Image 1 (cartoon, rainbow, N blue to C red):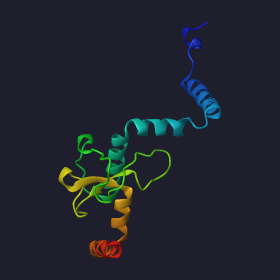
Image 2 (tube, rainbow, N blue to C red):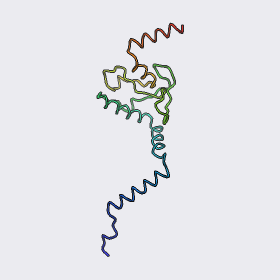
Image 3 (cartoon, rainbow, N blue to C red):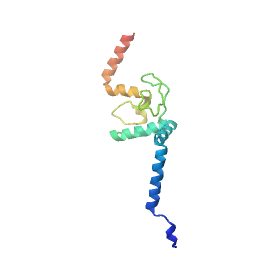
Image 4 (tube, rainbow, N blue to C red):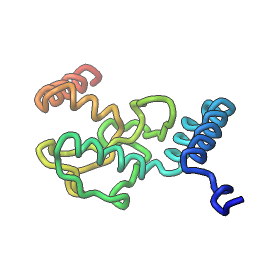
Length: 143
């Protein structure tokens, strides 16, 4: 018997590993989703930072904010609704969102506020003038 006969080939090790993970997936079909939800729940600010960083890269805008710049308020400063850190339920309108004050400037500390997703949707659907007109008309309607 040679010394090298007991050593498994790299291919054999990889095959055993693939088999192990295939069996693990069958036994634990929701493992990846549950793990992702757990990590996002425990590190919500970090997750929001990385999500926004990817968005900035996609849009080709500057991104210099850090985790220290993300302080999630209890109440959205624009809609005055409660901000809730929902995970695993899709994109909720009450979730926090990093909002750029000036769309022509990137994600820098002086150009962001943390709002809810609803505030972002409102701005993305209308111009500044339309939002101001809407706000004035809502005030008239409910005064």
